[in-house]
Image 1 (cartoon, rainbow, N blue to C red):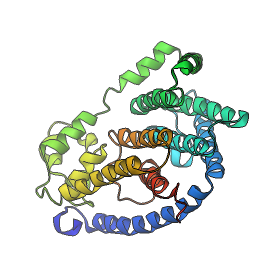
Image 2: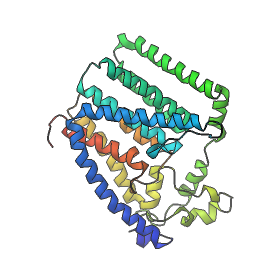
Image 3: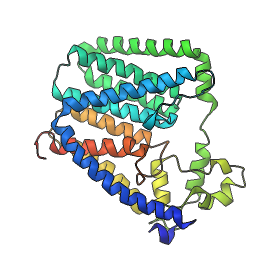
Length: 333
């Protein structure tokens, strides 16, 4: 369809067609892997927690090594981008915690240590990335997870003590590295990073075909907003992808693509509530879904792409939730 409604060089539309083929094999690989994950939750709990632990360490170590000139933290591999590292590390951590809880109701000392230490490292890495969206998501998820784990009213004091301890640790680390006021100034100086300009362009100049969009291969410089809004107002550099999964999906694939995307979210929510897993796990699954949703409000533009960060932010956790709800209790592979 992108060849019929799209604009710009055909090579971009060929790439979009190639991505749609890659996504088929990528999803098949995820489905094949999830069977093993469901059957061996403790092994994969440790692995996901180690992924989050080591990923956070690369971010922190790289930032400290380049401290004199690097403005925002970034790590290696999948966590190389300051905006994307937060959601990826947090999703690894959230899945790891859920898998640990699914194995036993009472965590032993080694598990408590790795969960607590990784939480601190993930949080510090996210704060060093200076991504405001990631920081807000991390803080929201932290409160949410705390309320799930310590929902017994008699353990509320423990929750407050733990939360206060971690908050003080974060503040001390940030103050030692930057000075707290300097850190706040760094967070605020970028304002909306031109996202308001980007979103206005996409929303004020919708695609001609509301059902099929502009074509998933159409680049921002061929968007109707480029010549009549971004360029005349000196926003050429802001002419980039939508930085919002829902706006980007509507722009590229119209109402058809947006309906498909929304149906994935509604299907996942339905599966969570219909599943036979215990209530605590349902809450945790909803927490992971919340991370996905919030992370895609200010980044990404499509779920149909080559194997990139969106796979770790969107496809990995959504397929995991679906599989966990459908096959965890039945053991049906």
